[in-house]
Image (cartoon, rainbow, N blue to C red; front, side, top):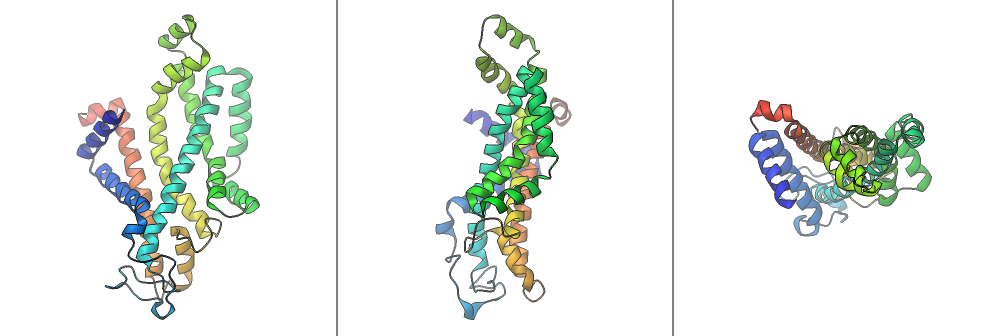
Length: 286
């Protein structure tokens, strides 16, 4: 599995320049998230009022905010929140989507009608970000509540994709053969169906990471993310609004971080989609 993943990554990087840039950026953000205490030059919560609103310079590469905190250090620590929330939301949404989508697609009938017609459409009737805002407003701000709120609105897309793929694959000959040999439903789904539908799900997860990072920044911008003084890109954007014209670096650098993170995951998702599409692979000579 590891060798296959590495082969796929190297092939994407060699054939697609944007995918290479995306993987490099994701690697940088992951390193920032894992090793922030050793990479950040200063404590991101250290207040130094005499140094407030300093422009970028040798002492502070990205300048300082309205409390004199080093923006470069806060951007590095903000990667921790974005990567943690993004990966947790995608993992949680994917887990729920795989379970509910597989049940709806495999069993059909009343199960399919309940999950796809009633439950999924009920969640789709509310915009995901509004549902997350309502959930966090009810539960209170915090990283766990934020992840839970984004998972509640994010599983539907995975469930619909899994259901559609299961409906197609369950009619294949190898599934009928496994059923004729007496294999249990659990074995058929986990050993025969899921491995054959995982490729489009991986693509959806890669693109979903971009949406989760952007959703976390949006929630933090609205004050519904992690509470201060924890550094978050969205909270930094919110704090910098009042100084947009006299100190634009307060907004510029966290906005660039959000933009690069979203772009990198979108580049990887698009490259994976093209790589896993047989027609695109033939046209590209893969």
